[in-house]
Length: 199
Image 1 (cartoon, rainbow, N blue to C red):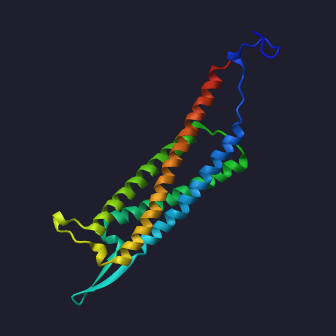
Image 2 (cartoon, rainbow, N blue to C red; image 1 turned 135 degrees about the horizontal axis):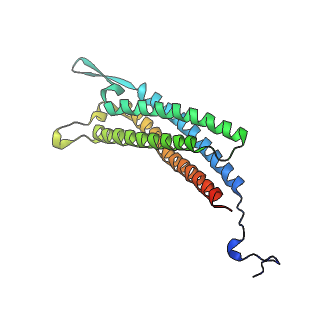
Image 3 (cartoon, one colour; image 1 turned 90 degrees about the vertical axis):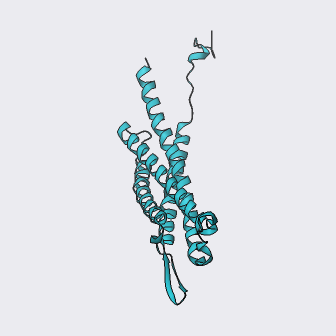
């Protein structure tokens, strides 16, 4: 069968996709997400880590701070780790964009994929744990006679809520980044497979 005057069958016609545009969009998206994680991770850690409120109860002063709830300690540490990790990976993204290399070596791709997966799981679990503790602090648990802590420490709870909202955006961004790193890794394996099977 002739295809445009050339004896090539339609099944073997090379298809050219505009991969440079796709690569550029992926790199920009990854860099933006890493910057969002860096900024909001630091903001969440600062909001929760510096939060405190003193109340006087029966002439005794009681200070509420984030170390009173271990889930908030876990959230602060997790957001700090996510921020440092995103700073390092963001610098790698900038270097990659300056050099202009599209695909990198498999060990580096595997390391980025594993790091993104670990950070995604850790940030999601920290937000889930802190969110559950916050619901109990806000609503109480009448069955266990746990009172509503946020009725007494309103300012403290509001600032913690803002920190948890920032941490939630961090965790969603990490999940999206883990999908991007998975796409890059499997694309790298697909590119090598095509090279090895070509004639």
